[in-house]
Each structure stands twice: as C-alpha cells, then as structure tokens.
Length: 540
Image (cartoon, rainbow, N blue to C red; front, side, top):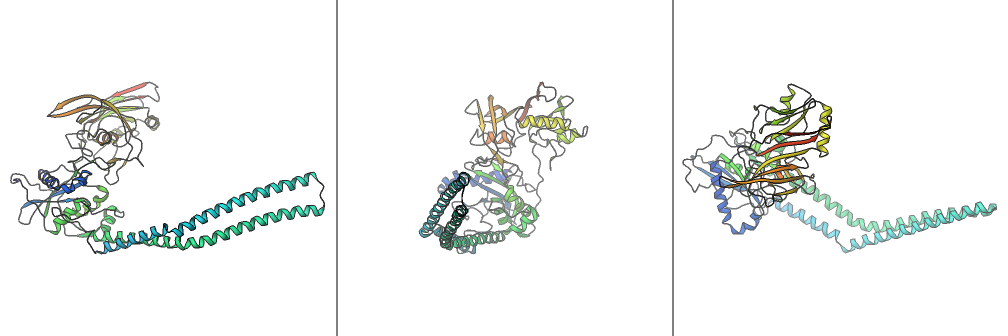
C-alpha cells in the first residue's frame, strides 16, 4: 500500500516536525505525492463522472523502519460506492463488509422501514382514514347546522316571551323545547363520537403497529450508531487506542457527528500506525467541482475539517512532534496609525495580521492596545485578522451604540480594495449569496439558501494587468451587508466570480498576505451631524 515516489527525492529535505493538519503549507513531498495520486485517479475513467462532482483526497508521506520514504493515500467517505480500492489505504472500519453485524442490522432496519411504508400505504388503512375524515366532517357539519337551528329557535322563544303574555304551561313548554334541543345536541355529539371511536379502533390497529415499528427503528438506529462509533478504534503515535465515543467525550465533549472517522486524514494515520510507518507530512486536496454551499477549488489543498476531525486528530497526533500553528499573517508588534480622531471617535489603519478584538489566539488586539490609554474604547465593527485598513472605535458606550445603529441600518458606506487572480466577465455587478457558519469547518462560512443571512456585495473593476504571467484584477468592493467573511466567500464562490482573493488561505491559496484592504468609511456623524469620510491608503 505504501507507494514509492516516481521522481528522485534524494535532494528533498525531510522535515523534523509533522505539519499541523489544521494549518499548513503543503510540503514539496506532499505536492509530489498529490500529483501522482491525481495521475492515478485520472487514469480511472470509470470514476470520472463521480470525481467531477467533487471529492477530498489525502496524502501522507511516511518512512519505513528501514528509513525508506514513500507515501500512502486515502479518500474521504466512499469512492464509486466502495470504501476499499487497491491504491488507497483501507477504512478504519469497513462499513460495507458483507455479513457483518452492521450490514445485518442495517438490513433489518431497512426491513422495518419497508414494513412501516407498507402499513402507511395499505389500502384498508387508507380507506379507514378516508371514512374517518368524511364521517368527522359530516358530523361537524350536522352539529354546526343543528346549533344554528337551536340558536334560531331560542330567538323565536325569546320573541314570544317579549311580545305575548304566556301561560305557565306555555312557558314550561318553551323551556322543555330548549332542554330537548340541548339534550339532542349532546346525544347527536355522543353518537358521532361513538361512530368515530369505532372507526378509530380499526385505524389504531395500524397506527399502533406503525408507532411501535417507528420506535423500534429509532432505538435500533441509535444503538447501531453507538455500536458503530465503538468500532472506530483509533491509534495514536504512543500506541494508545480510543474509540470515537471516548475521543469525543474527552476532546469535544459532544456526541460524534455522522461520518466521523471516515475522512482521509484518520484513515491514513491509522494505517501508518498499524504498519509501523512514521508519519512525516500530510496534506488533503480537493478534486472536482465545489460542493453546494462551500468553496472548494479543484487542486487546492485544505485543512482537515474541524467538525469531524479536530477531536480525532487531537488524539491521533499524540506522540508526534507537531509543528506549532503560525497564525495567518501574524503581525502583533506593528505600530497603530491613527487616521481620524475627534472627541467621540478614533479610527486606526489596522495592519494585516492583527486582531480587531480580543481572541483566543493572535496576541494583543487593536481594542486591547487602545484600551491601555482609554479603558472605555470599544471597536465598533470588525475586520478579519488578515485584512488591513480602516477600523473605527468609539470612545464611550453612547457613541458605540449610536455607531452600531448606523452600521445595522446600513447607513455606513464601506469601500474595500481587493486583488484577485483572473478577470471578471463584467466590469461591475452585485453578488447576493446568503451566508451561514460552516460548523464542520470553522471559521469558514458557506452559502446557505435555507438558513443563511442575506449578504450583498457590489463590485467594480478598477484595473486588470499581467503579473508574472498571470492576469490580476484590482477590485473596489462595497459590502451592503456585513457578514463574516462576506467579501472572501462572495468572490471565491463558484456561483459568483469564482475567483478567491489573492492570499486567502481559507477559500483560495496562501500568499504573502491577504490582498484585502478596508480603504474607506463614509457616514453621518451622530453628534456633529456632518458627513465624515475616513480613508486608509491601500498598501498593495
């Protein structure tokens, strides 16, 4: 299963540390291995249609006990309906193994599904439901009409009492008439309920079976999923083994998500540990079209997904010397340049690589630094750590709230400058793609037409030129809304421009920095009532 490199690697230096799978630049050996994997899958014409839809592959450079360096490879999930193919490492647990407990139990659960469906579509059951519905409607209609009749008779009786002098006997007859009609209404209602109850008894024979089978299916499915998680017994470099339940309870404190353990990364590490291979470097890359909602570019390398793999790889990498994560464009020592200030507001030209507000990682933020001289200062809006440009802060809580309202009501015009590789078909346009958090790949965002929030961006082409043999376009961007990663996703997503911002390591490829700069803010000052324009010169 271990593959030798087809090219000479004798002059390639072997790194001493394993790369962090959640933030890395692919090593030269990984690039070479990925190229060989692509050549192999391109030779399998029977896979071409499926691969066009998109799939994640991975390569793991390893060394044998004798010091030979090669690589192994894996795919995430299934490929061509199978989880075993000769070129790739096997799954951690084979879900598709014939006659296994999993397959037998799944077959029985599927049989329960069929039985439920048969009961729901049974002709007698459907006939009874129809009879019940018609009878219920008929009874309701009769009772409604009878009530109207009672109401009319009451009005007639009341009129007689008002207009005529009635004898004692006549008054008693009117009372008896009223009592009879009320009693008859109750008898009619009771007869109707009795008739419906008899039909319901026949229906319940079916519904009781359906409910019992449905509950059995639910319980057996839950038990099978739990059993399945226990079968994924994952190793680490220390030789320790934990199943998915143990791993997620320790590192994630949540129940494992469906599909956990079936990604490329855990498959490769498991095979390496089982076969006494030393992991050297790992990388995962996308092949084919981008999945719905996400931004995936054919041939690009991506970090392991956090939703499924963060807890798993935290366990599996124990015992390996893993390279510390270098935060994107980290720049925590840069001097903050004030570009606007009055008694209420202060604006900073935020350098790329500095957080806007306090975070778990990344060193001191702009807000923390500014609060050293004024504890009341608060950042009004945020820029991504990798984005540079105008960052506005309020000097007190009243101004903070007033400016927050202006941003929320879209009364602040924001202009950004971005560089992309390629040339848009149109010189200007509007991008409207709703966004939501990609919980499996935090902090990434995804296009979500069902649950996403409205996100609108206007773009204008400023210039297009050639640089090092590539066409580069300079854009002016006006975000109408202010969603997380809005500009980055809107430019990169295949349903818009399909051109990631240069240096966008989340939705494109790393570079010296993210080529996105917040150039200008324009708004009406809440106190001064004058239009304020704040500009930060673009550094690229």
